[in-house]
Image (cartoon, rainbow, N blue to C red):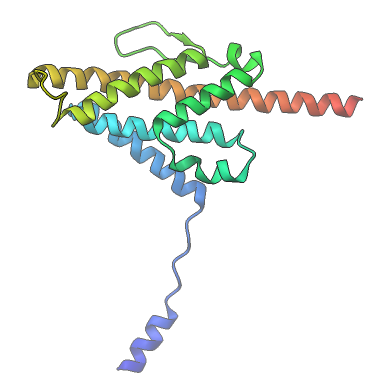
Length: 199
């Protein structure tokens, strides 16, 4: 009997590792699905946490395209959300004007029926403002400034609601901006190659 089990186990094929991009895309879809569900079910704290994770992923991807030093590249994923925003600000200032003036996102907010245009510098400022609101929501559920009168539960939950809805919009906007920025970079690279071939 033991020999039969040994033959059976040895005949089983080893699990095939799934492609990296397939797993990455699956996790990305799962995160957006959870975010949408959290918004629908009014689980604002979960929504806020997922939004920060998605925003961080976009900023890391943006920065890794520009970090040339191995030490920075290796450690960038361990940095705080605040650091990622500040580091992105540095690149937005030293990059060409083309990056700042042509890469917009066009996504209407939940309360607006018209699209809005945001430049990257302004978007980073809004992300930092949202980060402060995020901290107040996440950390404020069980603590508040010593000696100060805490918000009522209703006021606190209303603040979380607004932060979650705003975060959903900013997450979409940042994601869209990165897609457009990458498209612009590819276009510029292709044009440079064509000019080189002509010369």
